[in-house]
Length: 97
Length: 308
Image (cartoon, rainbow over the protein chains, first blue to last red):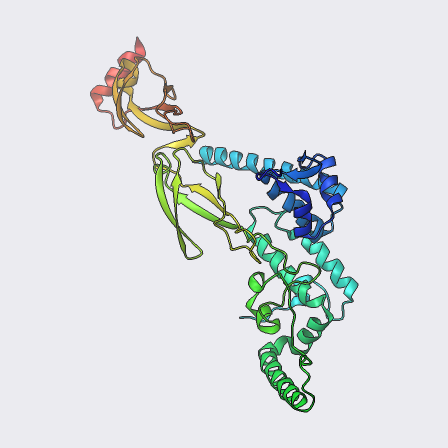
């Protein structure tokens, strides 16, 4: 019985013309979480945006699967820094008035 | 529709080799890829240009056509039309002799990328469906994400209210939650550009820009104001009516209040985002204003005070 709320990795890979090993490596590196139900691997719909981002980075920029880990980490840091910068700018605006 | 110099977009010379083009594309794509530059519209636009330039220059047939007609691209379509007409005539001629079909050399750059991501210039030269190739045919893609800014006054951001925005010709009604911060982003799933080949729509990201208020300053959920009191009230104490976001309140000024003294009105600040009934505080700084243009009598009294 296939749970309707999960997306089959096999279907995802066929759809995006990628090897299932690509997704397996991402899961092994802890970049996405997969679920195995009756020997079939699935991914939660909430992970889809992230997974598609990795596919684009891999395909468009030829980033090696193993290196996506580093890229992802740096992007997270960049997002965090941008958020901090916004907070600082708001504070600065307070004192500049 | 302006002529686009694809060579300068990629920063290569006209006699660049395929390898040079590939290298230049990769270098620029790494710099401007939308996934590496989230929320950067300029990078997004630049990436599309790079992609388009690569689409043309990495394909020998397209590059040949571009090199041939580049600056006079307006005439390319006329030429192609004439060529197609010629092909049609030849085909009709062949069919009438041999009854064989399907030999016509259709000028077809079929691909799944769709013309949507390419400039009018590109579509004009290579057709609406010319983009794509490299195994991406018929692949579904999520539509492009849109970025929008919504400017609000501080007093607008104080209450939960509805706002109508026009995005890409469509009116979108959103609920702005009280307490939204300057620079805060919200995502409206599916309100971006339509998906390609039946893919899901992109998302709409709205960044709130909260304008400064002439009376209140805001830091997080707390509000700050300066209030002037005269010297006599500061020394002897008194009462003062102060404006808050939700009305006026009467405050007692303690005797011997120093200039710059802060008082806090708990719960009279800004609403906390998505926490109904929860508010920050309002801080009032007393600014003691010294009297000016003193009369002789006032001066004498001050001298008496100073001598005590």
